[in-house]
Image (cartoon, rainbow, N blue to C red; front, side, top):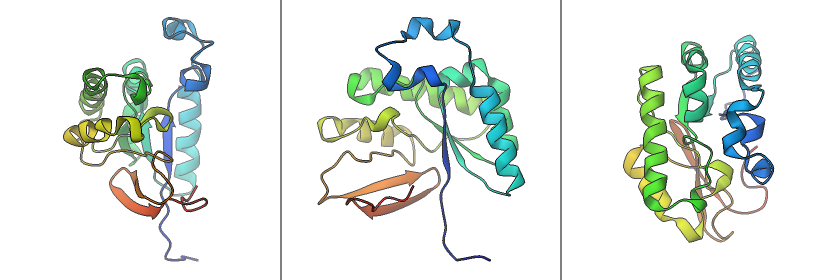
Length: 180
């Protein structure tokens, strides 16, 4: 029974060894030698979403798209929104403004070339945009229409945007105020 409630489903398309928690243990230079699980996992997710007639926004790394272009096409062919998660899962807080712009620009162009669609959304790896680098938000917005998931970057007394691809909602930043 419909509740009238709209939910947003988002998925990060990255492999286990690319998450920031493993950065001290798995060098980027080792990524190509690692067993990739992302293709199998995303195909399982696509099947599950299809079975339940659900669509999602897939925040996809350029590194993954470059190696699995057919996966990008399957995401789009199944009616899901494709969005950017940057090229190499580098935290925005660890990049200079020029490095950040290059990262999001290269990922955006790659995803657009593979999908044939305009890429509108971006999610910063590891919620890495905050008070110390709000310039990254401005840079991303200059390249994309909808940018960011900057939770929990700003103080609790400020409003934050939590954007999901082509739909955006603002929530008061307080414990429990962000869904999911």
